[in-house]
Image (cartoon, rainbow, N blue to C red; front, top):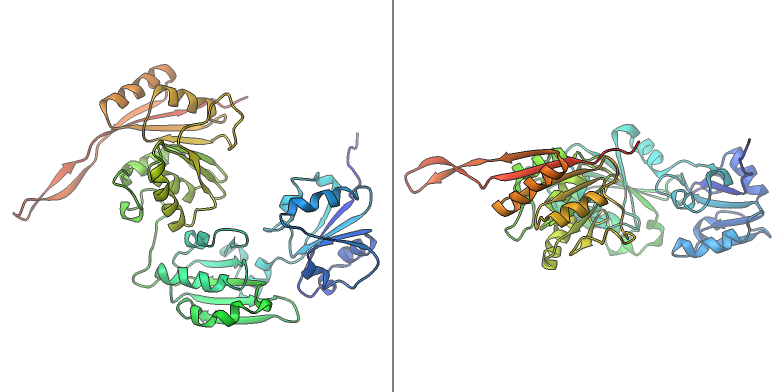
Length: 420
């Protein structure tokens, strides 16, 4: 039986040159609509007629009742470029079924920027700072990377330049496009270290510059921060309060936690959240939640999230785990690490929280916590290892060197059965 509905929402992507940017199909849909929904900026590009116009409210959810009230009529929602490329389309698909909608994308800013620069799209990284923490850019800056950045407003190019300078990428080549593909299109070229002068107060105060896209060809200077994507970053990269999972143990934990794109991760006894940071760097689109009984460590977690550009994806879960009997306010984890304050209660609760096929890794340093992991192994199975590392160190003032053993770590790894 055919259960498809007749689409009544037309989601149309439009460029900066307005109606002229639309395909024949998109124009026909727009002309046939009874109701129009868009921003004032895009409405200014559409000739005025007698049809009812609904302007997006902030937050978007406040516009939802107005759209719903016209169910049964033909409603055209006009968005910028490709609505499913960091656009309103992803939000609308959480409110309306796909078979209620007909989506006709326009040319995205990513496509236009690559065309202007002569870059192949598959060799660039697209990220957005629109409605997101501006430190997000720090996680993408790396030698030789080509970045296309969707701006928040006219202040964004200057902020991006400041991050480039701080991270040792002041020689990076920056191009800022304003009103791409429109009659008012402008292009601004500079090096990252020159950007604060070019994108000054006068630039930021000009409303014509608010709609802009940034391209960056990252060039590392001799003092640049260059971070491997492999787990086990140098401990010096993390703000901490002397309690930090050391790089060797961190790398071994991450390898067992097996980050995957879009994973939800819980870091229990998180301390400075170094495990969560390393996990997220290997899990694009992932989210991490930290739990630690000491609320004072949250300042270190925030600092590390900011430094690695992860404030939008690393969140404070609380000082204790939720009650497994309660409805969770956060998503269940695909992977979970217990690094401090381990107990059988925490292990049992963690196992309940884990999704089907979820991975759990726990570390113990003391004899008492090692005994708890041994009990968990006897009860649930899994793998247990004792890991020792020795580091070369100077011995006194003689100039001789020797290996000093660090405290051993006992690691328990367990995976939840997958539901069939």
